[in-house]
Image 1 (tube, rainbow, N blue to C red):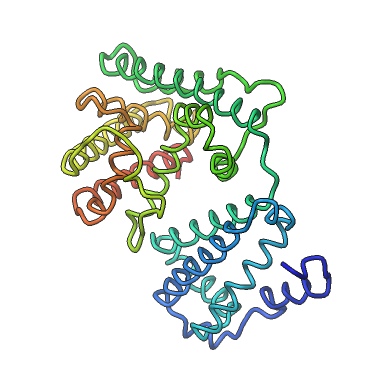
Image 2: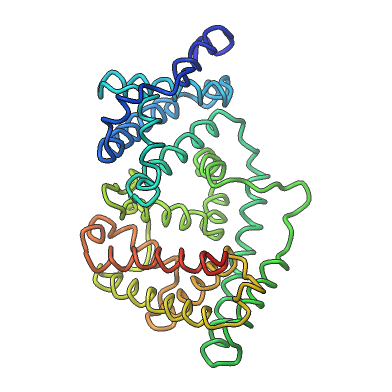
Length: 353
C-alpha cells in the first residue's frame, strides 16, 4: 500500500494484472478444467492470506487505504503467487476460462471458488471504508429485528392457511408478494447495509451488550452462517474458521438434521409442483423469481417447524455446528443438492426458461 498514490506504480500494477494481450492461445489450450479449478482453489487460499493480513492491521491504519488500492494490491499479490507457484500466466488462465465457459458454469466447485473470491474481495474493500457509528448500526439492527419478527408471524399464518387449503398456491404467492411490498421503510436517515458492512460493524461494536442483543434478534448471524454452511457442503468446501461451537443453540443430533433436511426437500418439491400447475405461473402472468423462491422456502421451513418444533434459525445453527459430519453424510449432501436444484427450477419456472 506504500505506493497507492503513485500513479505510475498503480498503472504498472494494472498492466501486470490486465495485460494488453489475451494470453497465449497455445498455452491456454493446455489448461484443462481440472487445472482451472485447482488454480482457483489456490487463489482462494492466497486471497484469504491477504484478507487476514489486512484485517490484522489496526482499524485506523486500514482506513488510510482506498478501496481501489486494496482491490488492486490484492489482485496483484494473488496473480504473482499464481504465476510463481503454479507456473501459469493469469492471462492464459482467463482465456482458458473463456474456452471452457459452458462446462465451468455447471461446475459447483468453480462456482464456490468464484463466490468466495468475490466475497473476500468485498470484505477486503469494505474493511478499508469508515464504519457507520454505533447508534446508526443499532437502528439498522432494530429495524431488521422488527421486520424479521413480523415475517415469522406472517409465514406461520400463511403456511397454516395453505395447509388447511384456505388458500391455494396462487393466493399464497399473492399474499407473500403483497407482504414484501408492504414492509415498513427504515427510519429516516438509516440506510441499508450489505452483509459485509454489517459483519464489519459487528466486529467493531460486539463488545456492547445492546449490539449483541439486537444482532441476534435481527437474524443476521443465521444468514451468514447459512451462506458459510452451503459453501462448506460443496465439494472441497471447508467450514468457516469462525467455529459455531462457541454459539449456543438447540441441541440436535446430526441424524435429526438429516431428516429435517429431507423433509424440507419434500416440501419444496411439493410446493414447486403445485406452483407448476398454477395458471398464474404461466408465461402470461409471470411470477417474480425472488418472491417465489422465498415463498417456497418459507412454506417448507414452516412445515419442518410444525413437525419437529425447530425453527429455520435453530436448524441453521445446528447444521453449522454439525457441518463437519454433515459434509460427509451422503443423504444430507444429496438432499442439499436437491434443494438447490428445486430452487433453481423455481427460478426457471418464473423466467419461463
